[in-house]
Length: 509
Image (cartoon, rainbow, N blue to C red; front, side):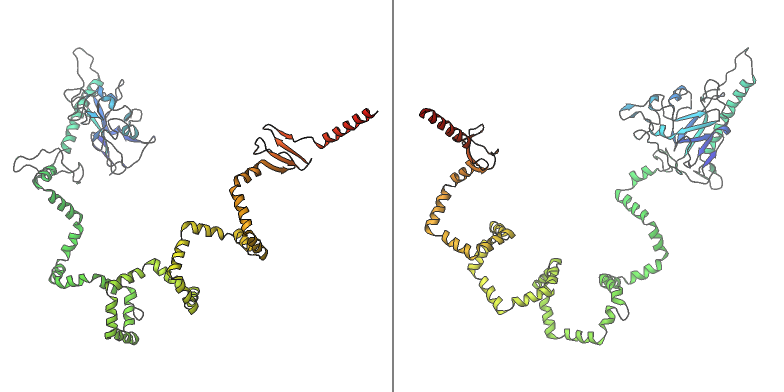
């Protein structure tokens, strides 16, 4: 059911999702007898206007304020410019005609079409998410275009004495009356029909046998009044009743199934005790049904029945084995076995089972190794090993293990080096070393002050620094600004000598 056309309306019931002009929904009003006025395309010559509804919500245009004074134009309870669709405020702002727009729907008189604009509706204040929250869902939303008389309180055409009576005036007047009659017929059809066959009123959707709800019913006061859902839930049902009702509704299919096997249910009830015992062994029964347990010839049950297993089970039943199993069942043994079963222990045991580890363990079992381990277990060794285990010693040992350090230690072990080390340990040498150590600051200072280079140093310069120039074989000192020669250079000495010789020759004549 996608489209319905009555004497006064065109209904998408439901709307199929078809749109035009991006997101607009189209209605053809050519069958509804609407002839637009020359000066107002939204009002007919006989006083008709259109009303649009989305899922029962009236979609007002801003310009509908023009017709709002007409009796029957506004929805019941609405008041022009102060209450629309039952709302008087939205987000703290008053509801007025400005809460909607003229783009929510518009008329195309040239093609006798009405376009309903989804975006304009859902983004307006009145119909947006904070207002009536109108939404459009294909195949569920019902959209209705209804033609109605603008003002039902009187005729839309008024004749005057001595005026020219035209055919158009008469047509408009008769159409006004005709359309009022059509509205009355549709209203009557939409009312609850009475069935003389059943002596009941039936809430059918007009033209169908689809049952519909009846709303806006007041709370009952007399014994024979209709009871509403709210009245029933809030007056007669407790919170527990509501919870139980919801639970039953959720398992209605299961209840129907049980009703169909009531005889079986009765039989089961008679065996309740046995069933309880079996239910207590649900885990064991589940294990028996697994393929590993029940498969013929290869399942565990099949294996238990062969002669070898039977013999083994007979051994397990002997007094000694039973006693041993009793010991294994003690709390301490169970706790120890639980530890052995942890993933870390299982991993370690797998490592211990490798060939290399087995070989090492065999070596550890020899008499010499056992003797060495006994020595390692003495209190003095244990104390020494504890000292070796501190973090600083571990760091030092790591440094000693470096390749370069090992090489140096190899060099120290050479015969000549050992002899030199022996000489160093002599009393006088040790005293000299201690003297140098006591004056290490001066030694370091001398290393900073005096340098040998082929050109003047440029870094770490202090006033008073010395350096020997290996290029010109002269010693220079740093005066805080530049390097300065100490005494005469070789060239200067030669010139001085020549000058002295000349002077002596002159003096001797």
